[in-house]
Image (cartoon, rainbow, N blue to C red; front, side):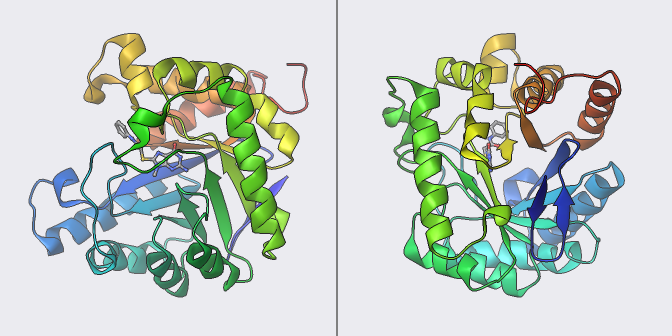
Length: 282
Ligand code: 8Y4
């Protein structure tokens, strides 16, 4: 099993780690634009040294209630980081739901588009279509960062997320994007309560029936905080266990903040013969 991206065909025979690079002035306290870029580039290099298989670079916060950036603001944040990151010899994903940012990022050498709106906008679909080999991660959510919290209502969250991702993957393939370029993501925490996230995690392997690799992002999220009672800075152990649970339920790419500990945990998991979901008994 592989994920085809612009420059790299990523081997998914073992679970892969996607390292999160947030290029936001508030994630690096010095505030100024040059300092933000320099810190973002340093973070990319650090995560690659720690063993990240993919870097996911984003300039806009997807958190509930976060203020939205213009294309120019978002691009000014990520462009200088992307320019250096593409030299690091690892696949680069751009975390954006804006078609113009996707277009510019792919032109600048990004390999993957990580769209929390699963290419629902025709313009975003066209941006990915325009690059013959670019990879795409299609994530489930409802509404947007402003409205999603009120939309966390499901009869059966796993079935509903599966139906949505199936419909999005079909639409993307009908637009001419090959199946091997597509990865699906249940979107933990996006229009979902902790109860929904747990139900989805327990049955995540059902999503594999759709025929695509699954990416999971649970790192430091509220579910980990709710279950452990820990603030965001103390969620590493919970996040590692969540990563292993996601792998046991078939995830092939794990999106995390803490790359080195996640690589170690996955190395031990695989060496010890831990389940990786897809082929062995569930
Ligand atoms: C602490 C730190 C608390 C981070 C919450 C958060 C996903 C994603 C995000 C995901 C994919 C986040 C951009 C939310 N989550 N993309 N993006 N999958 N594909 N929150 O799960 O990390 S941002």
